[in-house]
Length: 132
Image (cartoon, rainbow, N blue to C red; front, side):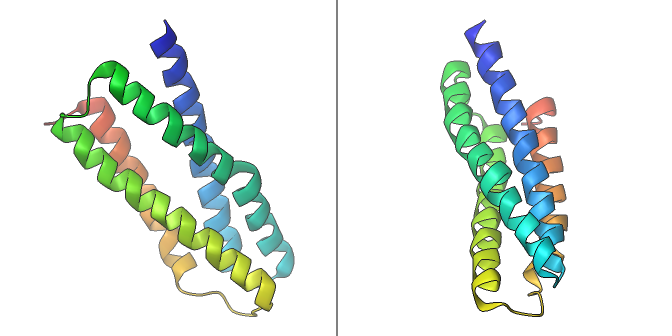
């Protein structure tokens, strides 16, 4: 029963994290300061706290289910690291844009949304199907 509660918390955190990442990617694309503020709030209020919960609950689930040696789990971790690193880049770039007051958005924000969606789709497929 504890496993199912941790799994529920993990899934809620993943959904919240993805919502924050999408908001960060979209808000960072726009040059208006109010959209960048929304993107920063999505980082501080959604994405960052949710990512902490994901990184705590995920390994706990992996230990409980003994997944560390499963090939599908190792593949999943690659995409989790990619999306986590992207979060760090988006967060740092948003802070820099806000500090510098830049009028244009870097290409990173145009590329971020497809990376988020593709990574999320692959992670979900690996978790549900466990193809290898």
